[in-house]
Amino acid sequence: MGKKRTQLAELQLAIMDVLWDRGEATVGEVRDALNKTRSLAYTTVGTMLMKMERRDFVKKRQGDGRAHVFRPLIKREDVSRSMVSDLATRLFAGDVSEMFCHLLAECDVSREELSRLKKLIRQKEQKLKDDE
Image (cartoon, rainbow, N blue to C red):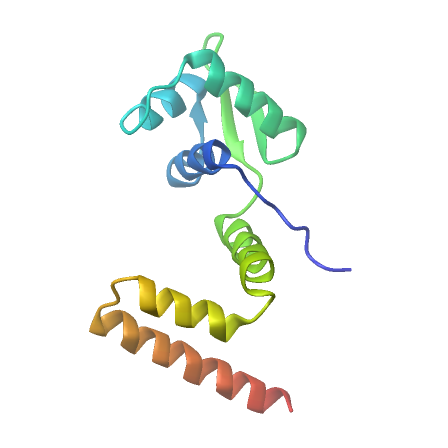
């Protein structure tokens, strides 16, 4: 059985970024963090967090006073892996080399980033060789 694929919409991902960075937060704390880059109503963030709880993305507990505190149940790495895999499949028909060619052509890549990519490729080559 494969890993569960987790796809998040833009607002869900922004909310999860806040929770991943903080470990846990109230609706108000999430809203305040998000309002640095966008204007959202408290009820919008609260409603989204409740929907995310129903999908087992987050878990809530009673905090001090009346506020609920939310914490992530899914890992950033798992979401990233799932969303990148989906992107490769949908936009590049699963052709990873085509996706990398596109990224290298369209993104500003520093020498340090290229060096890191080369190292990752060498590591993957070694792992494939070891698995033979």
